Length: 324
Ligand code: SF4
Image 1 (cartoon, rainbow, N blue to C red):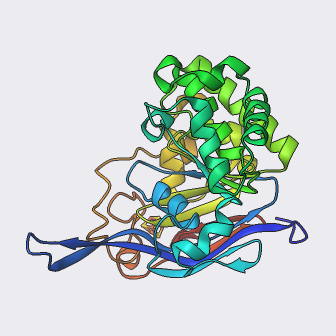
Image 2 (image 1 turned 45 degrees about the horizontal axis):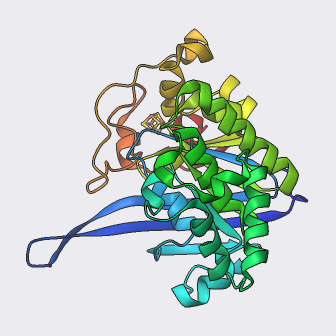
Image 3 (image 1 turned 180 degrees about the vertical axis):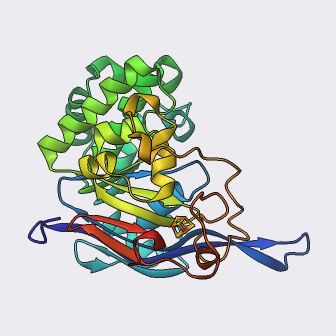
């Protein structure tokens, strides 16, 4: 990645642990949802975060947005440290970073019209003039492919694809620079997925948006992302430019994910069948967290946490196969 490109978000050694408590409220352990992840996002790019469900990718997205306190690490948004800000102190940064949810229906108030829902966002961000708010909402609805009459409609009157357009409208309303798209097309019919992906692409070009695109679907990630991070049990195990990573997957977990997608066509030498369940993040395996499912695991993998190895200038993998 060209270091001259503008960094929008830089996260260093992020950890997010959730405490587990017994019936009396006593802490009995922790879920290590995100465990020492570092990631940098550049202006105008889409960074795809991929992995099985439960690997921590959504938690990482929410951590970067500071939707909850992080356990450890540093988050710089356009160079400013937001890691430890209190909710009230975060308010000015909220308009720079937004989120698009898998199913916006659950986050839309069924009793409020779309116009009221969108206007509320503008009110929170200080727009006190009703006609200015309405004008802005109509402009954004048009931008996401909805019509002026949709302003007066309620969430149940929309199809899944239209609801996702409303979710996108709500996210871009306050001119963010960074958006976490959390499985934004997973709940949609395949025919509608392409429309939403194209809409996100058009908005990105127009507004120079930076996306963290979270998905469990390798084909969607390949189509949408400039760079990809592969996540397993709270760790990023491989990162690279999309073309490079898909044509030359290096981490055994990435190879296994790609082997499960016949359409992508992994070379026979890279084919690995993924067996067994994802281990519990309450009690992750020692050494390399993938060793319980890796066909190449050795005694060393059970003891030593693998460091990141540089495959090319824009491609890294955390695996001891590349130690020499
Ligand atoms: Fe497999 Fe060992 Fe590499 Fe982990 S470090 S992915 S267990 S070979």
